[in-house]
Length: 419
Image 1 (cartoon, one colour):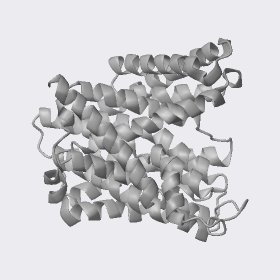
Image 2 (cartoon, one colour):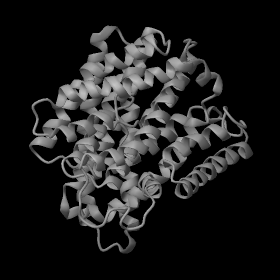
Image 3 (cartoon, helix red, strand yellow):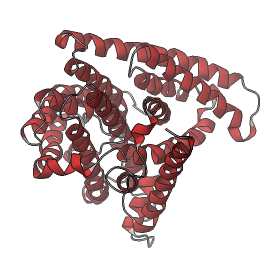
Image 4 (cartoon, one colour):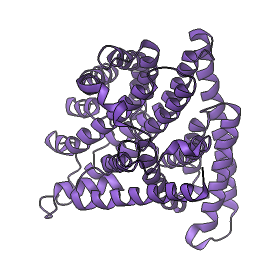
């Protein structure tokens, strides 16, 4: 790849993402959907200006580092009070691992036409809801506790688990893991290693931040944090692939819970960088999707996603929350809201590259179905969740409503999706 072509790739990707952000602000449409659409326009499905595969092995490195930044930001903001919210997240995670994986795989196989092994990989990839989409929606809706904590906690816990499980299932497809026992061992090893390294690194980082002298503007704190975080995820990835994801979440969680390190000063800076990462990643990954991968899915692909939204999600969350101290309206919103986000897109893109390199048929269909899932869930949930929450009486009543304040609900949604 020439130097000029590399500069053009990054310039077009960042410009397309920034343009999508502006259009989302002006139009009131969900920002993530427009970010994906911008990638389709500049990539293989559109004008072909950006070809992510030109980055070669560097694509996985860039995506991994940017995703770790997003997950670290999520760990900083993870709030799971003891009692009901923590139990709800644990039960939802366990039930969705047991029933959601099988349901997603069955829908992908029978409706979207993926072969059984790739359908299982798809089921694991789409297990997790995306914190990068859920968190802005929760903030915009102003949900009464504990719904916001449960929704955000579910995504942050399931995202690394789903990615690691999908990786081991992919290795099973490629013949690099021996049987389901090997898959189970690999999942536990990667999660345990990543969590352990993340907890230790979080303690070290928080101690470094505590000992820093006054730092007007927080520039030095940010530099130290980025250096430690990127070193952590790179070291974890070099030892066990995908173990950097749980490590990033764990490190952020530890730093946020040590007040002496003043995590609130770091949070705003990290959040801006996390949003920049999303602005770059969504167009870059969507640019690798072509209509040749989306169009063959047809109605079967749409039906597969609708089954996930209308059958699988309500069923699994309904079972998981049975008997908990949650009202029926609270359970109903939990059963509905499940948009997929950036880690889902990143995992799908990198897996498709490995499958194509190994000559496994169906890689393009897998990637196309994942991106169709992201587009449909983000678009539909982003537009319907706020009015549903208001209708169910689940929003906090402090202050005037959007209508009373003279605000356009679509503009409010766009603002929330871009925070």
